[in-house]
Image 1 (cartoon, rainbow, N blue to C red):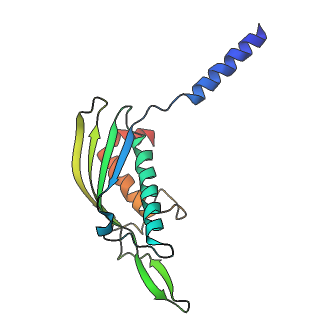
Image 2 (spheres, rainbow, N blue to C red):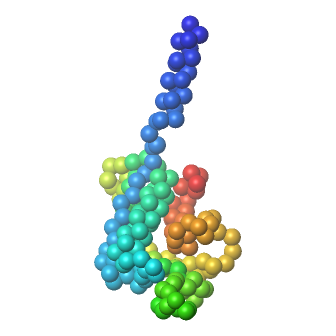
Length: 170
């Protein structure tokens, strides 16, 4: 009997930790990225850098959308991106290409979003134009080792201001 109870306990515990997460989802569309203000690379090919930028932001939006109620879908169409900093070419004795991060070059992003309910009805939608002129000051949530942390903090601020109930799931 004790053996059966142990097996049931193990199965119950396994089921609890392997249960699918009940959360929202995201769909991101990058509209005419060649016309974006700044997604210039410093030390990698343009196409690789663009792919890396899109992948990072796609993952970030998806992680945020996972905090929305079950069945909701956040659709985002990014129409402009201006990364923090500015790319400088042929700097220093090695003629390196580097991104200078300075208060003058703050991150900005424009996108349209729609939040859909499980039945595909629109809960909310808007055109968004965000910027973080104080990105380089104060205490922020992510470390500088996190890729595009200034931009992600800016997106987080917009997300939690727009969907305040998601703060409970931080």
